[in-house]
Length: 386
Image 1 (cartoon, rainbow, N blue to C red):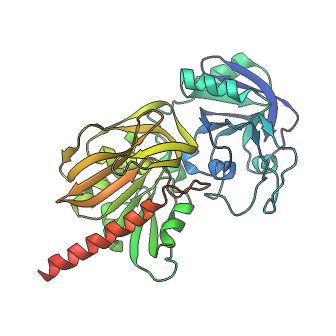
Image 2 (cartoon, rainbow, N blue to C red; image 1 turned 120 degrees about the horizontal axis):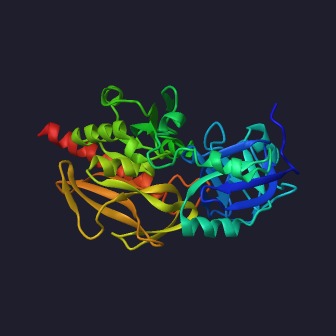
Image 3 (cartoon, rainbow, N blue to C red; image 1 turned 60 degrees about the horizontal axis):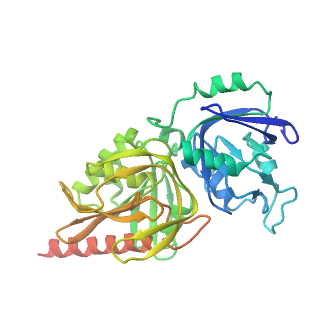
């Protein structure tokens, strides 16, 4: 039985020695991970159940968290994945017609350790200035030095191979809604449940495969397209996914990637990836579509980025690639487009167009994926007839 930590003293210790004292929130215990902050003012249930947060202690920058409680509909996976949760002022009484229990009760039920009643603004400013770093939270005692020693033994996020912890254990199929138009294989690097749903509602039958799937397994399904999902950890460790990506591109299979999938495509095309100082996390990040000049407010969760030139396209063995989107806050690469013989054959974005819990500015990207598969089908048919 997991004990509630409500009402007890708790401490948070960063690897550089900064200490915050507060009140326990969620389960009683200790937890460790990488301290990151999320700027979303809502959608905490989707954040906590996003597999991309594996190994991370999330700091909510919004001061009041838990207002809408916890429901049984908005989970993005089968469990909470964050290593810990840091809030300033948890709601004492949730109020929403779909709420089944409080956020604190759900954290206790799933054994997630958190801390409340600390200055999350000061903590966020510290992480912005010093960068994301290892952290420990404890509601078991107040020995700062002992907790700090344990924090500094936690492996860093750079070089962390975490996809294997979150990927599905076995393949499954999400059927198309309405008339089936296409079949897509989705590689689960840490996929959110809303992603297959967005594909399904466009008439796509989605075969979700584990991250260990190889090209032969993909080809056996006979898909019209390949989707690479979001996921946690350092993309430099996703060598198998990058090789699968290269095999798909060589075979002419239309490809769409998001988040980790964007980084995998970038590495498959010969670019490096690097760790951001503190990353992008939240549902209010401005991104520029360089082709149209359109600015989208988008959902993000990434601590790594693709190191690709933004001032010129690059020719690769699979076609010409260019940076399609950039973040307006810091100029980070937020998307890639690969063309061959004047046709779009693959594209990716660093953010989350499935938009759970919003916004929906980027949902059109799923329609672009459908259009790319339709164009490929027409071209293939024309080539066979010729």
